Length: 70
Image (cartoon, rainbow, N blue to C red; front, side):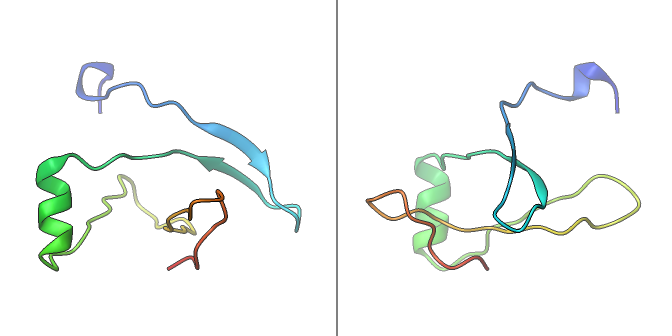
C-alpha cells in the first residue's frame, strides 16, 4: 500500500499487566454502522498482510471498564 491509500490513525502504545506490549485504537461507528450493528449484521475486521496477529475487540462500560474481549 502507498501512503495515499492510507489515512493517519491515532494509537496508544502500552503494556498490559502481563507484560504484553500493545497498540490501542478507538473506533466510533457512524449512524449507518450503528443501524447495521443493531440490525444484527456483523462487524468486519480486515488485516492487511500475510499473517493474522493476536487481536481483541471489546467495548467499554460507563466507568471505562473493559467488557469481555471477544
